[in-house]
Image (cartoon, rainbow, N blue to C red; front, side, top):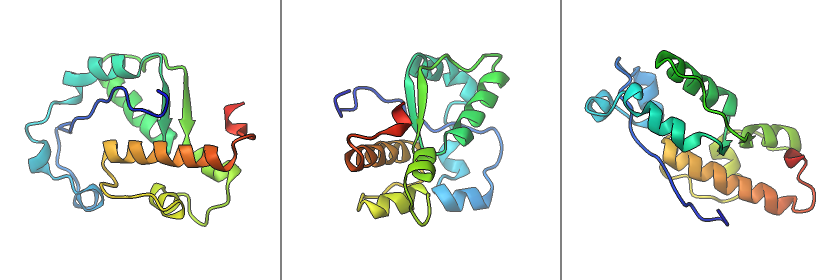
Length: 146
């Protein structure tokens, strides 16, 4: 709100299965780090309430939404009603011309700090900073808001 984080939800989730080595290499999260974390079903209601009636800002929203929908469905819940999704990947692909549209490459373009990359909270904050850069670059013409 007014460029200030007013609330956040962050938690490891126990996937109830082994984390593949290639995934550990990407995000640095190991099985030991999540073995005592809550299962999705334990925090599903809190996540539901956190995103319900909100606009979500996500880089690669299709991927994240599918993941969340599947987890909510496993809990016997529907995906919460949201007011919209702002997808920085879709904006990058449709309205800018970056050589690559990964979160890290776009962040590098804008000289944004990428420490903590591939962790949900850090990625969310980076997507927000990138969105702000998009808005600065096209302050009068934001076709993605129409």
